[in-house]
Length: 363
Image 1 (cartoon, rainbow, N blue to C red):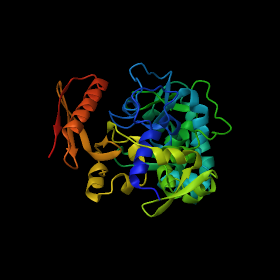
Image 2 (cartoon, rainbow, N blue to C red):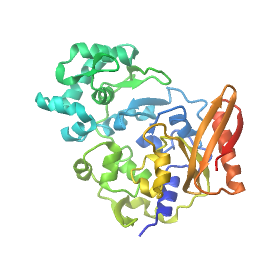
Image 3 (cartoon, helix red, strand yellow):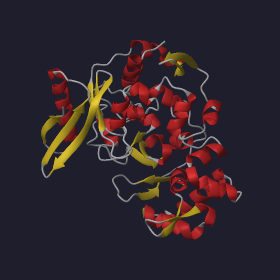
Image 4 (spheres, helix red, strand yellow):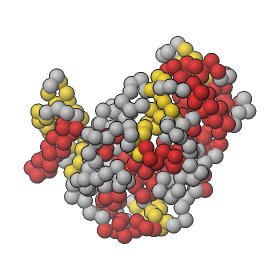
């Protein structure tokens, strides 16, 4: 039996949210990928884990469309193994990852993995020089037959389905140029996918290492993969633990860390921080009303992490040269906790290169 406080503290430690300094080389979340969504995206996630992000450039990092089709940052040195790690495990796995785009391909008798390879070949030929996403999509629409395409009402144009487009990019050896909007795709210099990802970059093992203990369904939900495929590749070196009356798995090597983990840090987590991406949301936030506030359908806030617990939400407020952080606590905060949150807000302001006007603690 493991209580949720142990699980939370274990994840704080595993994800290195309890450290003040670190390097790209020793930052564990980069093994699984750091989602880069919103102004307080991947770089802020690295900053709250002690990485000095001011000197980072695309010589150090690579941005790829990978898990769930979302943009994730990785170490550039790891790109070959990452490309192997994010490959669908089967045609059924690929079907699930591309959502509604699988149906017309299946109706036409086109295997999804073969379709991704076809798209990737075309994309690589198009992107001989850095190319805006819309231009790549427009060219593809003239090259590929109807099962690959859909009519987009907002654009009043025919495009490739979005998820096959995104998931084929890595297969094509393409990265997203940092800080471009709309996204610019370019070839990864010297790209060659590794023959195998290895244990460190294996997505199932990385999830268990960083977000465990977990069930196959939780991992499958994170990856948008079939549970059957996840179970087929489930590690053998796991132990079973019970969390909230649910049997879950943990890598055997992490048993001692789970038992001994403790946390006494305060952090402002970005809306898509890996800590908040765990698929056992009731473990993260047992109160249903608080969970609804943290994970709305649109416009996610960030989360306030204090001593291994999520204690509220936060949102940035910028007006002209004024920058404040609005905190909505879920219970009364001590003066010491408010001071610690203010220190983190100052860190966020420095990261954004603005001056903090103050922290607004809601009722």
